[in-house]
Length: 271
Image (cartoon, rainbow, N blue to C red; front, side, top):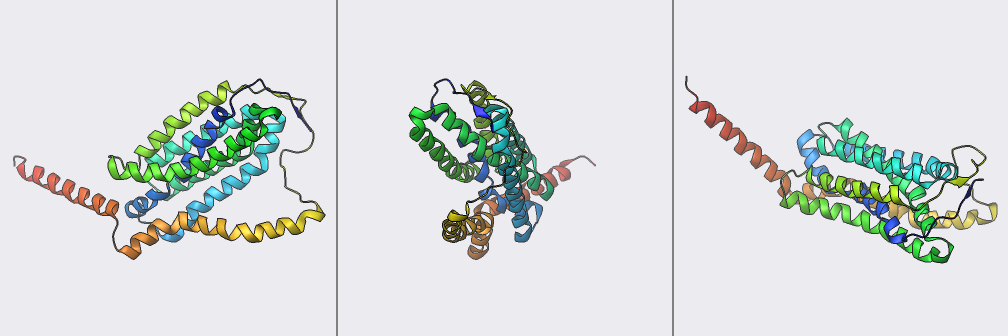
């Protein structure tokens, strides 16, 4: 197993900023799926598939990123994760197909998986043993704050500014660029030794603890699963139950006005 050399002193709260920036992106698309559905014409089932792409990327990254950061160092793993989040931002902003949304969601899932494993470990490493509790608090707070801030910003910006499915990803890209600067400047050192074993870390639970893990899964898994369904299908369900969506109506009105203006210009053209 690789031994991580002690890092120079740094601020755990600053080190947690990349965690916040990536988690802002993780849930930012949620309020916008109604708009994409209206624009691209896909079903609720297709929307669930898009969310499944996120889960696939998340699980794949969780299996590899922690082990890779132990062997290569936190920074060489966290930095590509933030860059993948930036690519996902660009894809979301210009998405014109379900495939583009699915790929963007997959990349976002990979970025979040890297952040959960290597990114949060980097925060703890920066804090050091003497500030382990503060570093853990900073990492956890950053994750929750970013996950809640993303959809809040997306909903507010889509209602108040033009570019309903673009503006939030421009803002998110700015946050992620600042996160890149933070990651590059993190006072982290490379691990001593290359480490042994494979690159994939499959979680293993001691036999004596399996009962408690199973009970924990039984308690928390339904809530997490329900949250995922609400995030994926909630906006579309509310729009269907209420029979309206302000954003959808506004988009339709904009297209109607645009087509009317175009027709008027055609009639004014000289014959």
